Length: 560
Image (cartoon, rainbow, N blue to C red; front, side, top):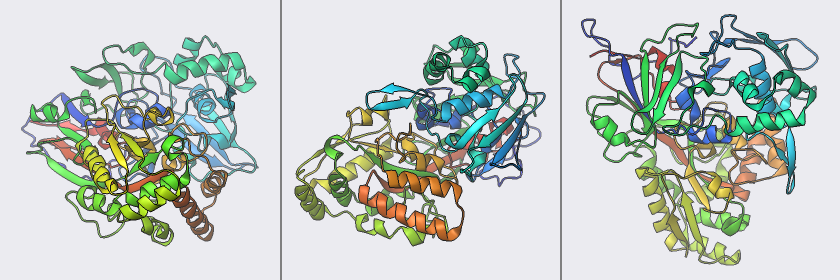
C-alpha cells in the first residue's frame, strides 16, 4: 500500500469539470537496461526508478529516502529467536500478472542471488555466480525457511550477526519472479536446489538471473517480465518509450491512470518535453540542455545521491598517492558553486556545500564531526597536485572521465576539472558516451566515472546509504573501481550492526580518514535534481532518491 500522507510538492489540482487523461508521460534519466533491480546493472542504471510499481516488495523507498512497509505485497515482522529472525508473509491474494501466485520461492531466489554464498572458480580465486549489485544484509542471512509455493518465509540471520537495516531487504524493484528463472534454467524445484547447494542448477539460475531479464529496445519478451504490482510492462522501444499499463491481476488499489509512458535517459528528453509528451520530469538538474519547463511546477532540490568521481585502482590510478594527487587539483568548491545547487541555497544538510563524505549523509548528526579530512581537497591546488604527482613518479598523467551522455552538467563538470588540473600537468579527457557502461572502469577503458551513488546514471540514494557503502566494499558488484580494503570492510560490517552513537562516531571518523587517504572516489556534491509536474497533474510527490518521482506513479492523475 502506497502511503498518501507524504508531503505533496509541486501539485496542481485539477478542476472537477476537466476530463481525466488516460495516459501520462514520465521523463526520467534512468536507463532500462534490465528488469532486475538487484543486479549491478540494475543499480547503476536506475531500475528502481522505473519498476518500483511494477515489481513490489515488502518495503519501498519513500519520498524522503526512508523504507516504508508495503502491506499490499505482504508483511515482515521481527520475532524472538536465538538469532535475529524475520517472519515474512506474502499477501494471500498476491499473484503475478501471468497468473502464478507470489511465493516464498521469490525470497529464496533473491537471497541466493544476493548472499554472495554461491561461487565459481575464477582466475584469482572464487567469484560470485550471481552479478548482484550488493550483498549487504543478504550475506548475513544463515538460511531462508520456505516450503515451495508457500506464502510464508522465515529468514534467520547468522548467530553472530545483527542487521539494523533489514527493511532494505526483499524490497520493491528487487524481488524477482522466481518461477520465470526456474523455468528458464530448467530447475523444477528452485527451493530444493538452493537449500542443497546444487551447483549445476545454481549455475543455470545465475546465468538467467544475470542476463535473462536484460531489456533491449524493440525486443522485449513480456512473457519473461510478469508484474507483481499495479503496472506491467507492455512494450519498450526507442520510438514509443517504455510503456507501462494497468496490471489487471493486481490485487491492491487500482492505478489511478491506466497507462504510463516512461521516456528514459536515452530518449531526447528536451524534445519530449517541448512536444508535450511529458507531464512528469525527474532528471539531474542542468543535465538536459535547453529543457523548457514553462507551465510546470518545478522543484529544484538536492538529492540523496552523491555526485562523485569513482576512480580506478589500476592503470594511472594504481597508486593511492596518484589518486590523492589528482584529488588535489579537482576544484570541488568551484564545482559546487557553479553546478551543485541550482535554484536553491540550503543553509545546512543536503545540498548546503561540497559533499565531504562518501558514506555519511550530509544531514546526519555525525556529518560535521567526521569530515575534516576533506578540507585539504576543497578548493583545488594545481601546484600542490603537480608536486604530489612528481613525488609519486607519475608526472603529466592523462585521465579519461566517462559518463552516460548526453549530460550537459556532467560535460561542464569534466570541462571545469580539465581546466583546473591543466596547471598540474594533468590532461583530462571527456570520455562521455551515449552507451557508456560503468564496467568500462574495471576494463581499463576509462580512469574515472562521473556519476551518482554507486555510479548511478540518474536517481540515486536513500537514508540507509547501503549502495554508497557497498560501492566501496571489496568484491561488491557496484564497486566498479575494484577498491579493496580489509579494514574498511570490517568498519562497514560493524556500522551495519551497531547503532550506539559513540561507536558510530568513532567508526565513521576512522572510515573517513581511511577513505580520504586511499581516495577510491572523490565526492563533489549532493546530486541536484529537477523534479517537475505539469499543469493538471495531481498527486505528484517529489522524491530525490533512487526511487525517483515514480515511487507513487499509480496515484498520478492528469486532468485537462
